[in-house]
Length: 66
Image (cartoon, rainbow, N blue to C red; front, side):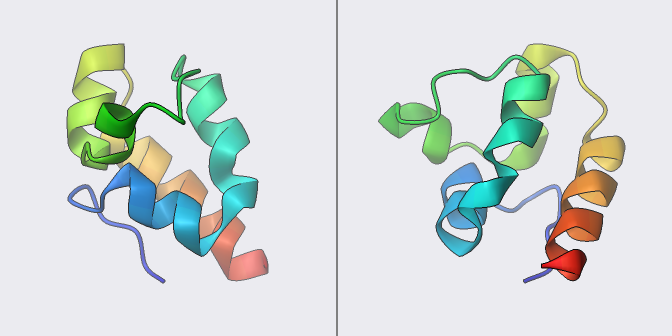
């Protein structure tokens, strides 16, 4: 899976649950909440004031190593 800014958080977590710490790092602690899993990565990053490009890079790097 390749993550983009438009990828839904729920899709990322379904593909690789070991990505959860990256979301916790950005302050998203309610990953079980239905609305959080339906947000795009870009939407979540805007809400939490995090760089979407940086998070996309981290997630893709992590997933490539799995």
